[in-house]
Amino acid sequence: MATKVILEQLITNADRLNSLVVEAKEMAFQHGILLRTPETPNSSEVVSFAPFTLFPSPVPEAPLLQALAVYTHFNTLVDKISQDPDFLQEALDGEIWSIVVGLNRSDYMVDQRADRTSSLKQIEINTIAAAFDKLKHDHAPLISPTPCVRHAMKSVGLLEESKCIQDTSRTPRMSAALAKAWELYGQHKAVILFLVEEVQLSQLSHRTIERELWKRDGLEVAVVYYRYGYMPDHYTEQVRYEYSLISVTHLVGTKKVQQVLARPGVLERFFPDQPQVVEQIRATFAGLYTLDMGPEGDQTVAMALANPDKFVLKPQREGGGNNYFGEDIVRVLQEVKGDERRAAYILMDRIRPRIEQKILLKKGLPLKLTSICYEIGVYGAYVRHGQEMVLSEVAGHTLRSKSAEYDDAGLTRGITTFDNPLII
Ligand code: ADP
Ligand code: MG
Ligand code: MG
Image (cartoon, rainbow, N blue to C red; front, side, top):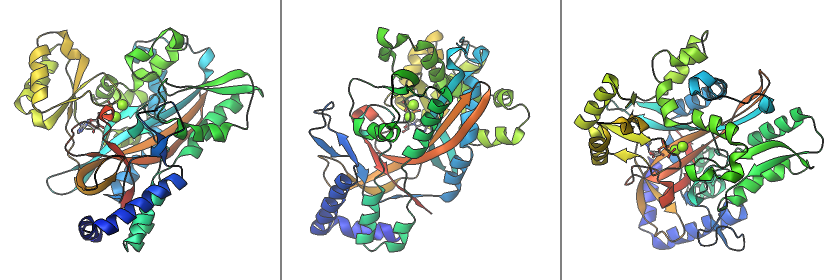
C-alpha cells in the first residue's frame, strides 16, 4: 500500500519527518485538539496537543457500516434493559426519571480470521460517562485529529487517500439529545447539570458540548449529565442522592450483563417480534462465557486453562487496565476457581485485530514506527419520554489505537492515541 512505502521513507528522513510533525502539532493547537497536562490536570494555563497517530488506520468499510447500522438497536437494548428491574434485579424510580437521556458508546475490534476475512466484534458497551469518556487524558473523545492527519497525508503526496479519511467529531448529536431532554422538561429556566470528576484533564473537550448548550440558562436542574460514577470510589455521599439512576444505567454496561445478553434467548426477550434485530446485534457478539458456580462455569474454567491465549478474563470493572490475558488468566483462575469469587469474572474470546505500523505523536514520545491496533467506538444517543423513544441516533464514531505490545488499552498507563479511519 502506498501509505506503507511512504511511511517507511519518511521514518528514515529525520528532517522531513520533524518538519511534518511540527506542522501537525501546530495544526492541533489551531484546531483545539488539546488536553490539559497530567502535571497540571485542573488548570488550563498549560495545555498540550492530544496524542494522535500521524497517519490514519485502514478500516474495512463493511464492518464500520455494520457497526453504525446496528447502533440504534443498541440504544433500544440499553434502554429496555434499564427499565427491566427483574433482569437487573434492581428497582427503578420511574417517577422522577420519566425523561431519560442515554449516551452510550459501543466499542469494537475487527477480528482478522485465518482466511483473511474480517469480522466486527463488540468489545464492550459503555453506558455511563461515555460521551466524554473516562477522565484519563488519552481517552477524551470529541477530539478528532482529522485536520492534522489530512494535512500530513497531503504533504507526503497522498492526495486521493486524504479524501477518504473521515472526520470523527460528534458533538452536535450529543448536544441535540441533551437539548431535546431539556425541551421536554418544559421549564424555560431549567439548566443542564454536568457532574464531573475532581481531576479534569479532558475539561477542554467537555466544554465543547457545554458551549453548544450555553444559550439556555436558568436555575432549576433539568438534566443531570454524568461523566462520573464508573469506578467504585466515585460513589461517595455527594453523589448518592442520584444513586438509583446511575447504578441502573451503569449495570446495563457491566461485563456480566454483556455475557448474559449473549446467552441463547436473552436478546429475544428484549426484541420478541424482531428476529432480524436480534440477528444484527448478535452478529457483533464474540464468544462470552459464564464463570458462575456450576457445571457451565466449570466448563469455562477448563476451557480457559487449556487455551489461555484464546481468551480474555474480565472482572466487573471499567476504565481499562483490569483484564487478564495469557498466563495471568491461569494464575487468577487457579486462585479463584474453587469458590464463588470466580463468578465476579466473565471469560471472552480474544479478538485478534490487524496490526499496523504507525507514527504516534505524543508529548515526550520519540518519533518511531510503533505497532498498533485500533478500536472503533460508536456513539449512540437517545431520549425517552415516558414510554416513548423520542430520539434514537448514532451520534458519531471514533477510532482509538493502542500499541500492540499492550494487551489491554490500559488508560491509566496513557497508551491510547486518537486515530482516524481510512476506509478501504
Ligand atoms: P474497560 O471497561 O475497562 O474499558 P474493556 O472490555 O473495553 O474494558 O477492555 C479493555 C481493553 O482490553 C480493550 O480496550 C481492549 O484493548 C482489550 N480487550 C478487551 N476485550 C478484548 C478481547 N475480547 N479481545 C482482545 N482485546 C480485548
Ligand atoms: Mg468500559
Ligand atoms: Mg473499554
